[in-house]
Image (tube, rainbow, N blue to C red; front, top):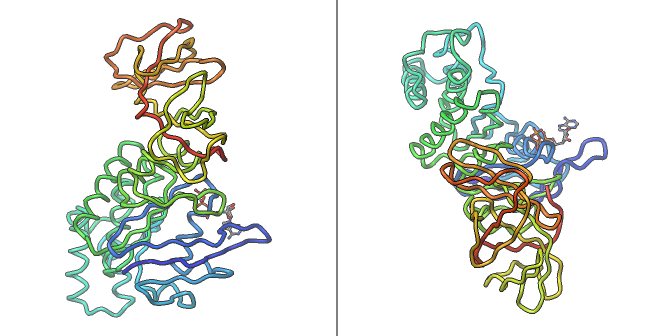
Length: 350
Ligand SMILES: Nc1ncnc2c1ncn2[C@@H]1O[C@H](COP(=O)(O)OP(=O)(O)OP(=O)(O)O)[C@@H](O)[C@H]1O
């Protein structure tokens, strides 16, 4: 069942929190709502769930206008950050809760609870209480509970943000497996963690200040962002001021042939931003080379990050952990090729 938001606007006390949001999620698709804090992600999700009533615009599920339906009539499952399990109930009773409320017969409840716990690898914990489980396990139970009612749409509101980094990464893998195991389930997942969004989502909707900035596959968002905001928010980027001048991109004293595909909104003579991903820069000269003084070094295990000041502009290169690293304060050359360059219109940056 697909999701469609059609011009959905929400405001609180004169502040617009969602500004005419149009968003379509195809049936079976996993879409991440990504954006900075306060950009409206949770409000968008809660409009789909029915907990927020739009001031204007409509919400469709499976082609049906559900804007006026209460949450329990929308056929959705939802998981929030705080698990929200009933502490006095066992795991199996928690998972059975929604089914019992729907009046599903006892035997069927047992089967479905078993299946839902199986899906998240929690079957052997069925008789425990939430307090006897780790945070990650509690979140698995919350996901089982949402899935037990066999929703066609699963809404996830930062379900992993209360977990530590290692568990978060494990649960991200689990969610990816769930998406493979349940190909018909449409998922809308709110996160401010770009790693999570890039790993899990078929498409990422990037929100900023109540508006949808870009909606694309993770790959396109990363490799071919169309705005300075997306370039800076998704992955790390060197964003450098430049100008398009008769087929050349001029920036930091360089003159590079413009990329073959220029984004809409960039015309000859325009100011623009050049996006160079740190991992595309090499230590040492290449087709194009800048020279600068090393201002920062950080080691991240498998990689080093080397930051240099190039005529007042900061360039960060991410090079393999095995590379020879220059000393702070020394002069380095950083190289790249024309193909490493992505050009976006000058505009708001994160
Ligand atoms: N019930 C409410 N009453 C008043 N303001 C609200 C309400 N709910 C949300 N807001 C405001 O709306 C804005 C967007 O909130 P929302 O929770 O949708 O953002 P978000 O992108 O999910 O942020 P975060 O990542 O911090 O959860 C925020 O400025 C928030 O303070």
